Length: 398
Image (cartoon, rainbow, N blue to C red):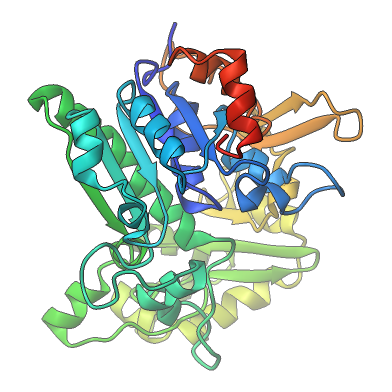
């Protein structure tokens, strides 16, 4: 068995979240990902949540399965080494602010002179073109500029950021898809393309169909909290010991819910007979469901609503830390536990790879690499000796 991308070598110049997550996805699928980091300090994300003096656990997660070399791209010798590494790579991935690499003499033309088939994939806040090209961005900026923030939250409250670094992970997923598509095309045509991905674009692309609906019907997106604008009930309800979600997006499912609530007459009530009228009257309908859930524990409500009862789409609202014991995720191999050589860390827990191909090996390396762990091996491929590496390290080049 091999990983489905085991014949790819990716030079990973990305840092923090979005770019490293993209290349972690590629590493999960078997690609050899070489993380290129600043000498001495490395990726800033190495110093996120962790025990004092230890590598960030967030860094561990978004850089799992990679190799690491150090290289100062601001030096002439560092750039020369990068171009030599490019000769052996399928793609170079970066998420610097737009234009920074070119300002260091590492422009697309120079990269393609070194390797015409190289895919150059760039992710930045606003892309390489347009009036906002080059502007700084973080996750919340992308969520706001991409339209997502305006859709999230309750009608009587302010816009709310999607949990976690959602925009960064959306951008990372698009970036991973783009790299695979670019390499496929380069092997077909013999010429590597340039991928210019904007995180604003990526977020805008997943704002449901609201731009289409607004343009066609003149209906603007509204903040509806956990509810759905076009059907009901579709919400999060408070039980005695937590919250559950219930979603009914068909008349058949709604009738089952009414029977479970012991309110079968609701199914023929003129206020609730169709998606359209249920959406219009969703506040009143959700209040009826909430009153029913409020008298029960999560387990009691789900026993009646779930597969052993009404067989409705429903679930407990679970925290990520609770889900490491979730039977479904465990059965799917979505919780990884890896021993760590540091006795203070002992074990690192990752979410698994959702892309589960048949007869495919897991990534070659379980954990994230130490800074510069692969300098000797990868620079050795270029013919550099131990003495060369010692000189380069003393000069601060690697």
